Length: 379
Image 1 (cartoon, one colour):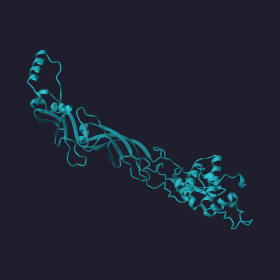
Image 2 (cartoon, one colour; image 1 turned 120 degrees about the horizontal axis):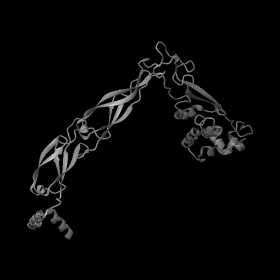
Image 3 (tube, rainbow, N blue to C red; image 1 turned 180 degrees about the vertical axis):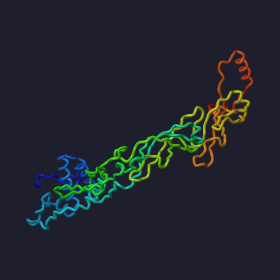
């Protein structure tokens, strides 16, 4: 039969000079690909799986690998040595390494993994939702009411899923573990894996008289309104957590959390960078030239600011302490106001003439930036 077998290196997809780690990695990849649990009722995959295991059995053993490299399939035949080739062949298969490999694939199904007790307390799932608030609400904080639908413990059965006056039975098939061991006979030996108990559905207990209100689930969907405190300084995209306001836990476990992701609505005047508030304010030509007392909007309301004479368009001023409060409660940012000169439109004849006469009175010394520009241009 040896002449019908494929080369073991070809089976695992490695070269003859492959290292132990390369062989092991290749085996894990191929074994996972063709494992019967991942390919139910697939005869071809089952045969491939046997072939992969057979190849790994030989190539992972230095002695067997050496004989295979020298003599091919004949060197690892159980009868090898009877014709004078030396030591015999140990037909046993070490499942210790194999158990480690498949334990990493299937959660310890081959003997090495932890099993979760289905009756142990389990934390409930968290609930996620989005909440839109205004720019000012984000800056100063606010209280919001949010309505959620969540799973809560059934009031009738108090979470055990049984009708009043009855109790669940420990599953006689799995003894309450929720898992049973499944053994598969293969040419390479017996493979053992764990699977959910079919009798109790992996729950470890059997309810003969389900609760009429929750139908045995132990929980019921309820709508609840919760008060959420939004901290001052929260930014767009940040999430707050309200402990214990998520779905109810199982078997007496704690409830999950309510996670609220904040969306801050855009403001008509302000935008935010960290704890700074930025805005732009139009000023007239006359205000820029002569200076003026301006009223500047802030998130606290209007404040007065003295604009110095000769202010250029694009100049930015700082209003200290008029920004966003720090979310950790330490201080507050500033507001930055960028002014730009609005050019007047729709001038009448009298205004045009007055403006021309005014322009004639001006010289180069009245325009510093203009002088700098043309000086650079000449260079």
